[in-house]
Length: 355
Length: 125
Image (cartoon, rainbow over all chains, first blue to last red; front, side, top):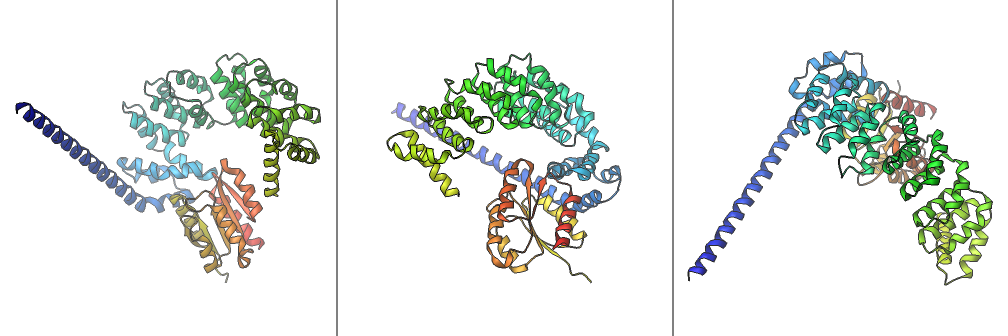
């Protein structure tokens, strides 16, 4: 009897504790929603009052300090939230005026003091807006923040430095990125592509002695992004000796994007690479860099065990070899059971649909 | 006296839309704004504007779909359509021009340049 009572009491206590927990969570959600709603309301009120003043400022010759003097410090972040879309979508005179609103007024010291604070949320927000407004005055503080133990602070500072086009900071970004396991190649690329093409020269100088595969691969991707032809020869040397699939694939894509004909010979030897991804990429590049002397090698790829390679072989033949369509058609309909022929039929019908 | 030219424009970025409305109205245009591609073609049929300014990337219905709809109406083919798109989506510009767009403007853009381009297109008509 006592055992039953104990179990009953335990269950009742558990249910009671869960109910309390649910109640607390619901209250928390409601409070957060109310706070958010209140903030949004305040922002909307701010926009309604200041919107026209900002438009007139963008139109006219008003001193940015005159406009900012009228706005209370507590409302600076509302203004910055409002300007965010403009920073991202406007250029020329519009952008110069927008950045003057930050860089020539009290907003800049306000953001730099936020950047120096201990709160990651405040630091990230300040770094974001200082980067958007290209506030050179924040550069040294942002560089220090790259050493932060907090990954989000590192990322927001790196992004701001990239937007400032602080080329000297790029290797600090690489060095510090290694401390964080989840800072991926893609997130680094997203940040570094915010630089201008000025980043390419130092990356090229570094690439000649760089052994780190991630940095090699990112540098080559950025060369492709900026179509930096000067890196062609150095990347070719790296690709020839590299054992890394990613570096090889990125190199091939780069050659293709800048139409680097000198790479065609090296591609010939990669056509039999053990990795299918490399073979497929070689075929795509040959459509741009190859010539008729590659025809037989490409035909051989129609019998490759990988679908991706066979598919790109058909596409490349059609692009590279004039009048190849008839020969492909004979191959496609003469070997009905062959997988390569089935892929050729698919490509031909896709082409007919498009035409 | 010149009659006010009407521009229909579809842009989902609220503040940018308001800025463009402000700028173009100041230049003497009559602006009709749509926050997405929905209803734009019907709006064009109803108001017969002098120009349509279309953002390509919009929720629910994108700018290229709207452009296709506009160009499929015999009575609307003469209306110039200008596309507005992000720098990173230049491939859509080619598609847009193939579909019959008159011109395109890449984001980020200078608002003065946008106004001048619109004026030039309307002057040439």
